[in-house]
Image (tube, rainbow, N blue to C red; front, side):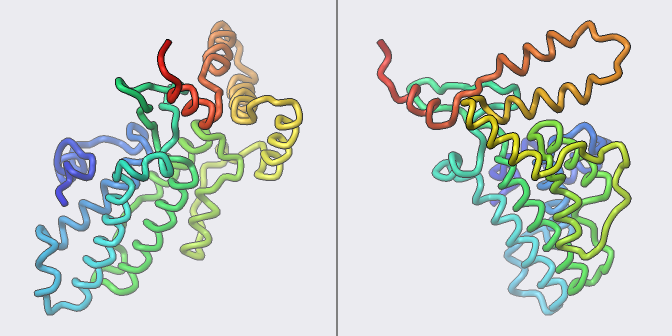
Length: 250
């Protein structure tokens, strides 16, 4: 399967050398690009794997191919509803002509699993491959993924450091000001309260994070606009959205 079939518009090698910093890319790009670049480095054609007599080389390629196949499986239209959010990154639902919706980014739980599998693959190829320092994802990229998850998905559990520790048995020097003010337990409590009052917990969590972000700012001219932008997102449930889309047009 080629890189364009996996959702890329130009070769990984071009993008990897293009000088684009991790802070400029979404998290799905950080989870995809470097593993495929390393795969390209070890073999231009995956069919060469079976003909190789280098067991270490072959083991590295097989591990990378398994991760690539996992990524490719998420592109199957039949599973999009299971792996992708029904809202776009702007918080709105985009309807397709003729019915259905255009799905948005990966669901947070899917992103967590992809990161876990990526770190497991990196650990495997470091242990069994020819390069014990092979890097599929850098500390800077992990920091960026952490920031994106916390700002976009209100990941109060701070999942990236936890997953990293669980897989590697090690830790990184995580940016101090990225430490969350709330915990997973706080999020569960918020969800219970919101459920009792029939209020979308995700909306309230996003507003709480926005308040934290704006706290202490001397110029607050855009506060009302920022709050309005959150409130005006589509906060219907996925079932409500799909039910509305399936209704015949009047």
